[in-house]
Image (cartoon, one colour):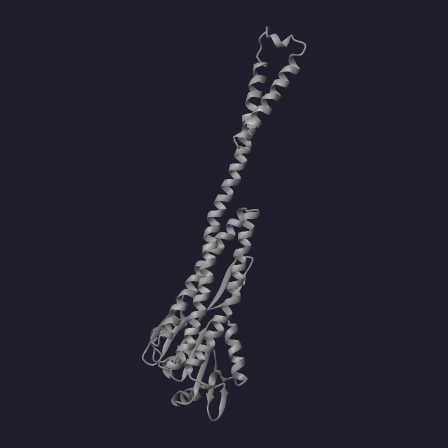
Length: 323
């Protein structure tokens, strides 16, 4: 399935083009054609191979899912694999992404995707309202799509960064096994974000340097702006990565300190009770002749002696700063 937009300088915007209209649009050098495809079937593949003469490797990338962004320069077009971020799931700490493949020619742009991408819907609405997006070259149309794409990253990454801050606060207040699970989930998602944002920044850097003939020299400044934005977002992700890495170490330290406090308390109680247990065990021996057994104040004296020992030991522990 696909949707077509064709901007003719004389006749204006046209939509709903058939195969013959697409052939005619490609034959003209003044117009600009944009085809957005999703759920590609055999008919779409025939269109891409017979009308656009795309390489078989490009068709394969269109069909098969990819896990990493890339850019490939072919004879008549430039092929890019990028990713759109949809939302952040607070309950699971997951970032949802959708693959967006772009094929840029001198007078056409093809975008393909399997999932719905809000950015494309926004661009289409602007095109229908006769926005100047399609009044320029095909590379400027690509820039406009990527600009919206990168702008959509910021609130999602910021929301994810806020989740990292919440996890950090929870870590030092009342850490639990759930906190450890959150740390591992956030760590995995940050690694995924780094693999998503970082390569796309590298791609924008290549385009901004003017290494591809499909990008007009006058438009490289726009892609340089995209590169700067992606680098800034990558820095935010890198900061979150450092926080999560430190959180894992902090979690171990907090749990160890808590265990040490428990062990210290138990040790103090045990050490304090040891002499009392010794005294009580002595008087539990079955000897007939023990002087204190027949003494009138023997029992109070022994109890008082036990209390004195306890007080002395507590004072000793405090002076040693063990409690």
